Image (cartoon, rainbow, N blue to C red):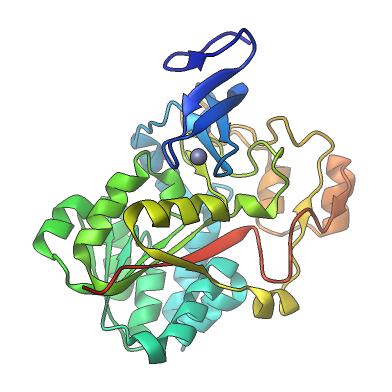
Length: 345
Ligand SMILES: [Zn+2]
């Protein structure tokens, strides 16, 4: 391997970067991992101390999200959001509908089920509200809720679909106008996209009341063995792959208490299947977009993402064995849902 910019070579073979989550040293695991767009590549580092993996450079050109959202119906992993929007519009109880189809939303629904009586949510902010269906589903449950998002096209679409619950704004601007107003801040599948996580949480802390909760979902690295390289979207769309220990570290750093939603109830009804790969310490994710922003993935992959093939068909096509894998436990899934509690004054 050749040394990469901004990193330190402590001897001839191992390259380190500082882990921005815990401050320990992170080791280079892979050079030139395929980027989300084919013309890019990123190095992957892993911090053993807090079991966090991250991409280097930790930077994103946000125009990539315009490329994604302008063709969202066909982007693997994103096209389901389009379906949720359509379903939420006609659903009597969209939060229950979402909780049934995806563990991310089950985690959020479970949070409200568990915390409603003890915490009494009063005013909720969803950061990164995207197409708006989660904000709307909380509104339908009777909560006072606002969604904010950076993407103007997403906010326009959300307003058209669900009414005036949304603002197109940056959290740092919003937080200065709404200090200490919110009892809950919800962020689903957001923090793994953000270069400076602590910067984001500073703004979240500003809008949150004392005793308020941040509810976060993110892909859970703890569900995999520690040598699995990067079983999440290619950088720079996902810049981080967090473990439960990463989130404990983050909570400690910002002085919050942390707890994790237990997925046991969900797991009873929804089995989690992870592709077993022979060489999972190597890159397993290919670029999604071509250099001109058209979609790079083969139609078969799109079908897999849309669940149009059954497990046997996928398995035979890819020539891989599938098994219920690694460190999935009764309470854990490949998604985690963490509750970070701000101290009361
Ligand atoms: Zn670390």
